[in-house]
Amino acid sequence: MRKKKMLGYHRRRKLLINLVMLLIMLALLMPLWYVLNNAFKAEQEIVRRPLVLRPQDFTMDSVIRAFRALKYPARFLNSSIILVVSCFFLVTLGSAAGFGIALSNSRFLNRIYTILVAIITLPFQLAMVPLIFMLKAMGLINSYLGIALVYTGWFLPFVIFLYTGFIRTIPKELEESGRVDGCSLLQSYWHIYLPLLKSITGTVLILRGVPIWNDLLVPMITLTRSTLATLPLKLFSFIGQYGASMTRWNLVFGGTFVVSLPILIVFLALQRLFIRGVVSGAVKG
Amino acid sequence: MSDTSTIRNYKGSRRKWSATTRRRFSCFLFVLPALLVILVFFLFPMLRSLQYSLTDWDGIGKEAKWVGLENFIWVVTESSFRQVFINTFYLIILYVPVLNVIALLLAIAVYNVGKVGNVYKSILFFPNVLSMTVVAFIWKIIYSYNGILNQLFRAFGLESLAQDWLGQAGTVLPAMSVSIIWFAIGYYLLIYLAGLYNVPVEIYESAEVEGVNPVQKLFRITIPLIAPSITINIILSTIGIITLFDLPFVLTRGGPGYMSETIALRVYSYAFVTLQTSYALAMAVILGIFAITITLIQLRFLRRREDVLL
Image: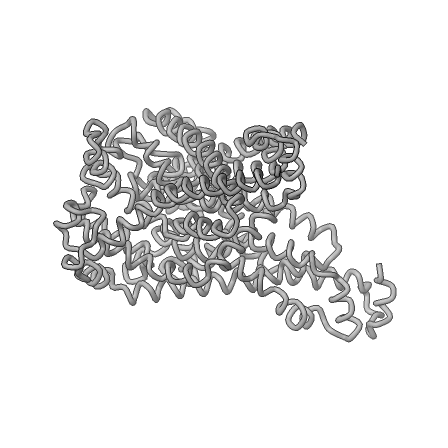
């Protein structure tokens, strides 16, 4: 009797929570719907019917114009190269360092590890200005390698933190048995450990790849040549052309839509991975 | 350790170094490349900032003359600095508590609804994968005079509430904070959720049998038990908002006037707009000290609370 009553209470409570959540979700999705539906209409329709897309108003015009004005394929390529090179450095250097720290029992490396963890939270702005002058002196301004090294130096402490934490959970006997079989450290890194690091590498790519792909500040200060611009940087300068008043809303909506499309597709395909990545990164943090 | 036994496995153990030292050295070699990149491209420039903030270095000329705290005094006594500092502080207050309370409540809701929660999680997290440039442009239009927000107010007969949200001193920072919360909330929600899943279900079950009401449950059980998540989130969100650049930069560029300019934006404008390098360095150092101090204060306070609550 009492149990039945409690079940009823639970169901009612669940329903109530779901109702409230539904309203909140609608409010949260509204800005996205605002962009999505307005990216496919003519300019004058945006103010007249901001949240309704009638079939007879549908047009790809703004999207196509934004796509052309952004020189989308070239920007996409720039963004991709920067992402791939940066992530390559982060994953190779980060996993190797994590491996070295986790397997050595040296107090020296542990101390270095403590320092690395402490500098994770230091603001990038503190390094920014001398870094730019240094890159200029080294000829690494307007270079894919230069910007990738900036991201690598900035994000490596966090990536090493993730890899070290993960490798420490792997039983050390694994490496010791490899050693008995005559594996050098390099061999056991390559053949034994690297295959085990797939999931944590996924986490690293999500937690640091997404911010790199989306970043505006670093491209803005290291890539002054317009042909090297990334998608967010080009979007910024493209919309900036229309001034602070942003009079051409259709192009703003079309532009934000095409720029967000790749990450939207990746997110929809890998939702679970994204969410698991953030959670596992946070739990260790 | 098994170090003595492994020595026998190495045929060339007659070298000068013992196996342990050699092993430690090769471990160090694995760390070295990463360390070099961090040193050259992150730590070294940081030390340079500290050093050159005390000189009149302009980045180009070779000679850097020691000027003591002159740069710091200049940027701090500059007429708008007070406003910029207040803005930074005000934004923390507008952002951190609101974000954390909403994220925690939503996490509890998601926790309680079972499987549908996965859909909510995805929706809440999605803005977080968008570029802040995109997010800022979206909200710039939402807040503009003919934007959807004002249109909704007018449609519901609240004409008087329709205003230029980003163009007025009184509304610009709250409006900015809302857009940042919309962007960031999913991330913090996931951290809270991870904390909630770590609480043993039995505790809630027995609380229910005892007839504990939801409010008591929140303050007496949930919050004390997920205190570590709260600590992480408060610190992460505070550092995040202090150093945030992209979103405020695209949304308002510090305007109107400098009513929404933060320390982080000012570092940029000294460095790359007005090209006053030594002031940029002083401002960056102030930003660093500000971020570190606030983090340490929070850490101390929150850790102590964690102890009390547990």
